[in-house]
Image 1 (tube, rainbow, N blue to C red):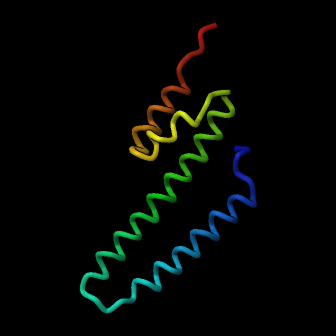
Image 2 (tube, rainbow, N blue to C red):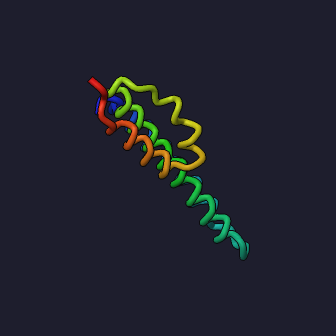
Image 3 (tube, one colour):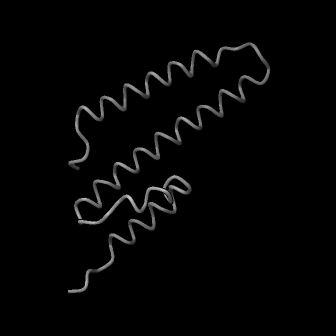
Length: 97
């Protein structure tokens, strides 16, 4: 995949580690509901990371096939898994000769 560069991967991993460190330090509150808030932020962090990873993969796949990926951005944000499945089906359809 030629979309992934070492600089991009290192930047994304560094950002994830930084956000994770902030997340873990904020989770040490003594309140009763802090675990629920901690869990919600963890889920949000993972969801955003997954959506970004999928979108970069979609950029790579559509660029190799000469398609436009930006049409898929809004549906990806709303529903990542069904959008990913629809994109894969769209990219695998036979081209009329």
